[in-house]
Length: 88
Image (cartoon, rainbow, N blue to C red; front, side):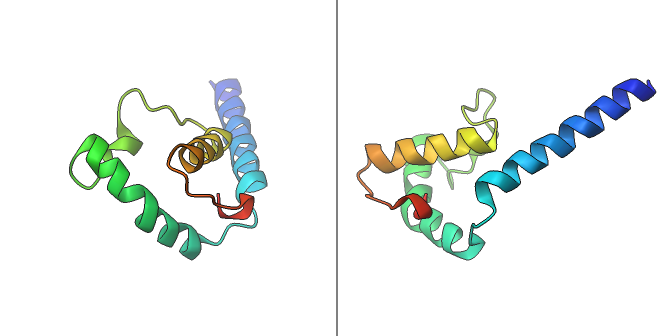
């Protein structure tokens, strides 16, 4: 049991470090404004309601920080936002 706990603790710390690597220079307020302006309406039209179900659906595509960045880049390209890399 203790070995499993230590493994899970190590895994959680590793994932946190990975997230910090991708988003260490992120500005949460700018990101929220960009998401509200460009993402929420698309998510709502695809999933209904306020669009938040996209984040909690059973078969979510995004499961990591790296996956989130890839999905944002995909959406940026698909809907022609022309965001710079630091805006993604």
